[in-house]
Image (tube, rainbow over all chains, first blue to last red; front, side, top):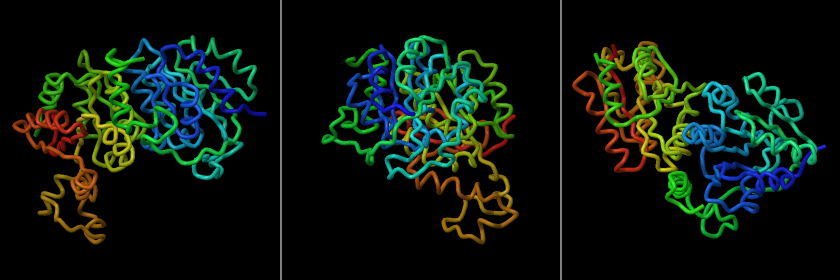
Amino acid sequence: MSLTKEEVLRPLARRRGDAVVVTTMAAVRPWGQLSSSALDFASADSAMGHAADFALGLALAQPHRKVICLNGDGSMLMSLGTLVTIVASGATNLVLFVLQNERYELTGNQLVPGAGQVDFAGLARAAGFPHVHSFQEAAAYEGALPAILESAGPVCVALKVETGTSGPLDRGPAEPEAYLRPSLAESAHALRRALAGRGSH
Amino acid sequence: MIRARLIVDELRRHGVTDVVGLPDNASKILLELLGAEPGIRPLTVTREGEAFAIASGLWVGGRAPVVLVQNTGLLESGDALRGTAMRMRVPLVCLVMVRGHGLLAARGLQPPPAKLDAGLLSRSDVDSVALLTEPTLRAWSVPWEVMANDADVPRIGAAFRRARELEQPVAVLIAGETS
């Protein structure tokens, strides 16, 4: 049993409030179709496997604001040490989602190492995350989401999601998702202005 | 010899709020001083690539971080540096403790030869990471300043100015012992 990306993202889009949302890989386009906030940031055309690190930096800089990272299992596997760094940092406002489709979806759905075997919730617990959740059914996830977003973190939410068919990510003016139209630098500087209260929300 | 206290004072003068990185022998005293410094938050990462992404997030969030790594860790960080701080145009100063600099000087290889080869890079009496540090920074389009003694500490300020002017990462190579 698994969730569709829409079942994961639509309830989150309704409840994210003024949280920053950092997306990467297969979550980038679906999130961009549901949300157009100045506090959305696509870690696309960026460094592989480092979206959660970037989100941690934001969380440490903005301790009174939730920061949500929509990471993939392939990306998480590239930097598992980040789970330890997150806990050791003392950040309490970071919510790390790990969307497990067990594939490198953007490169052609090749299996990730340990597909079907790696327990990301277990890894997060072992790293010291105080709050860890795992879901493979939409109603249970949606029911728990409000409490997840209100709890002091860091929080890790591991979700079994269906394999999709997202292709490679690009940035540029022709992109349908608004947050993929600026360059990565323009996006980063715009988010910085928004967080400083100098941008539109 | 470089007094670590002077480095800390220089970082404070430039409003640094966070030092993100991984310790090595040469940064031990510097990190101890930074850990005791009010207003500067140290954060240790598990691998150096994390440091550039975290520091980029800190800067986007309104903080003033620096990265502190050994040159070995700098080489490990290639895609992280390229894909975060550089591609996001973050004016990030990266303090790099240069392992192997003294050996190069003792072997008459300072400055390193322009042409490197496997023969030189595999010599057991030379630390290859010191040979590769500056060529790697050049290839990554990261400018650098070099510090070898107390008189060079103002190079940190120069790095901050260059980082702001260029809107990109700038490295400070700390090639002398710290005390």
